[in-house]
Length: 241
Image (cartoon, rainbow, N blue to C red; front, side):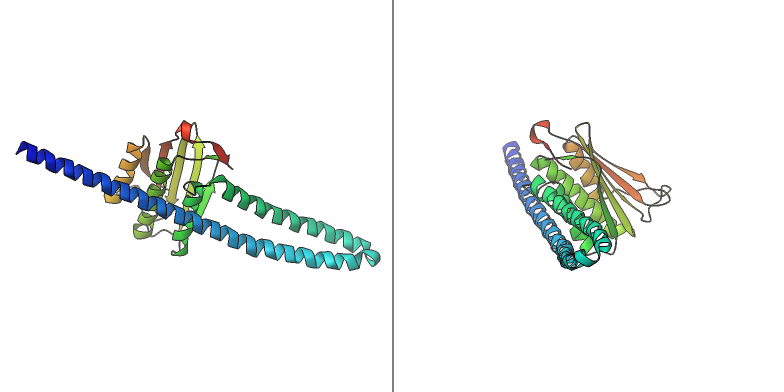
């Protein structure tokens, strides 16, 4: 009976390991898809914004050519406007290049932003993503933990919070990732927070990775979820700004 019981336990453990591996692989696919969507969104914004600015630049340069001989003062004012447009266009290019080049695998920052964009697209809630420091190139396991905890946080907000705005703050301090997801929903401090399966799963996932997941109230109402995770020094290189 003991041998049979041990065999059943080993079989259940193997099945659990296989299920975990499948879940990790599915998460990786989800992250890559989110990163791809974020890159497409950036490309669309560049095409629309930069294309409009360059068109305006060309039109005004053509006008400037005609203006120079007879209206030098007005031409000088136009040059100032053209320089401003050119600087705005260059700023957009720099942002896009930084986003695309900093996360080659699409498993870190770009995937998180893509996840937020996806949820924003199917919700009336206003999302604001704030990056407060340079961000490292995270190891895959760290990226997966962050992605899944943020995904669960935002899903929980959509289902239960009645929030109209959500702010995601991300920074790295002393070789540690600190990510806050705060909303202006209906939760108040006086009401006890019932940690269901999703919230408990977030806390356990962070704990197993050497981090923490805590919940605090937001004044006058709302909930803040703070996720802290250590950065693997061997797997991270400061790249993103």
